[in-house]
Length: 401
Ligand SMILES: Cc1cc2nc3c(=O)[nH]c(=O)nc-3n(C[C@H](O)[C@H](O)[C@H](O)COP(=O)(O)OP(=O)(O)OC[C@H]3O[C@@H](n4cnc5c(N)ncnc54)[C@H](O)[C@@H]3O)c2cc1C
Image 1: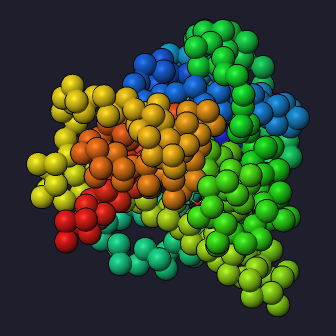
Image 2: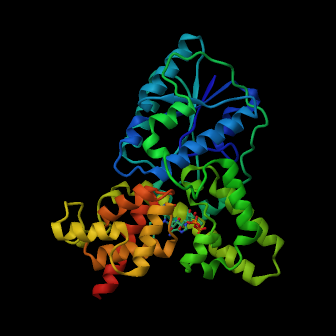
Image 3: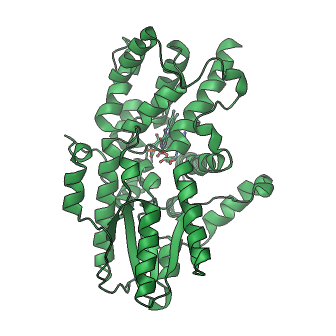
């Protein structure tokens, strides 16, 4: 029996652990753990939780169409994996655990280490795959670009047509989708949904981008109204939750470019888009090697300006105005209201509002990043924090130069 543990890789296509665990028609138990820890974090917001639940439902549907199903388990991730493994051992199985490596906050890093230790202590095998490209050997950082593009050009992992999942009576807490939505209804109840979760939707979004929306990407990316209408891909939440792989997006984009090879404008747009996919992975990589950047300044000379310390009363007022889109600066206000309504802003507006907060209001990026994380449907530590940390310090340097 193979335990197939989905985390931020909620897809069947181009997924290393799906391809490997299901090979040779092996028995597989696909699962996702609803860990209460996640829902208690200050930066967790409605848009992201809703997207996650939709992605899980879609994964379950896609598994069912292949003769399988998603086991939705509930509890502390470490205890759940240990309990599940114990039960399978008692039934006479020697389970092998499959999960993809991810860039984690401290909770996730410790959890994964403990799970690996547990498997080693019990002499059980496990396989840690890759969700997207990640270089784990710090000694080879100079070869990053070469290794990165080698990975992107490799064939996609195959999607199984059938998945062999036996019906199991498990004596560990499980939750149904309807109970899940009821239990976390404070996240679920949103008026409008601008981004729907799931692999099926991810593929549809990629296709619609490559059908027509990508034309003029390189200049439209700086026009907030056009980007809201779909001039950029809107794939970011899908990449955040792994409902599609960067490699699949990259290869589809290359195929489109080859199809329209004689059109230089198309080549320019698609190249600009592919470069951003690389930014995505390079930020993840940076967080992997520098997890301290989640709460420390990139350059220590900024420590006197930026800290997570509580804000003075005057700053609290400014911060509240920024969050509510009430600063009196129309472009900032429109963008901040868009963030609250839609859970999304385009790249330039994210940078501009962050700059406004840090430089014009003198409020640390720590506070702004938490607000971004709580509202962005694609909220991801690697991008929200590192982008804001990085950008503000670069721009502050220009500002004082
Ligand atoms: C202050 C700040 C905070 C940000 N926070 C996040 C975040 O929490 N989550 C997130 O996914 N992106 C974040 N970004 C990056 C970027 O703004 C979004 O990825 C992009 O706007 C999402 O829209 P899209 O998918 O239509 O992008 P597209 O323009 O279609 O780009 C395609 C993909 O490339 C990647 N990408 C694009 N721009 C960047 C960038 N600047 N850095 C890293 N990757 C990029 C994303 O994965 C995106 O989905 C942030 C940028 C800034 C300046």
